[in-house]
Length: 286
Image 1 (cartoon, rainbow, N blue to C red):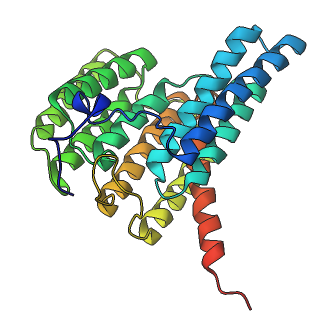
Image 2 (cartoon, rainbow, N blue to C red):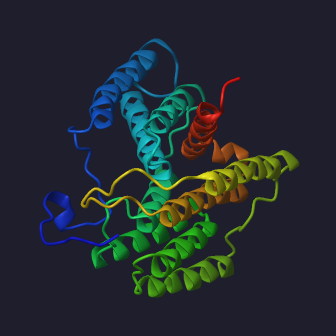
């Protein structure tokens, strides 16, 4: 995946991980239509039902949750456009039914996955490295989830050793470890004390599904944003694993009730569903 930086335009001149929603693509145009409709629907439901939020707040929350789930799933399964809309639908439904509204963890996973999979076709700029590192540390403290720093460490390390490595990310990875130790010294709980057997089973089921996706995934057909190169299979799979670890640590740290406050689980449910659907299509009919 050779980088081409001489003819970059728009936001790519400043950041290698920011991806604008280009309406030239059909799926992006569909998203720009769907999001306002979901916002209006959320507002209407809030106006007619007691949802603990006013119409404006419900509209913003529904749209943000839906977009976050769509954006992360596009990174996790770049060859499956439909998976992103499945995640969007699940996330919006969870927002209405379960009051799922916290998107901070989703954006943590999003930036870490982009660092690894390089869906733009560009390695991270120094600004990107510092921004993602700072964002992850802030989110770790904000959410009191020190385990976030482990997938952050993994993401930077993977980017430093996979195809076309960015060596300075060894240094970024190293910064995560003392912060992790500092939080433990401060007494921040590492794992929830009230985890049940079904919580561990839930993680195991999702982990088994992600392993199956990685083992059976063909070479990506999707292209990088800024070049005619296809995405690298190793990087896409590594990004999927990093994203899942971000999701799993939330359940380990906070327990199931807190885990359901974020739509990140909807993204991985959609990834597994799209994988099963793709496998079913390939089976020969008798």
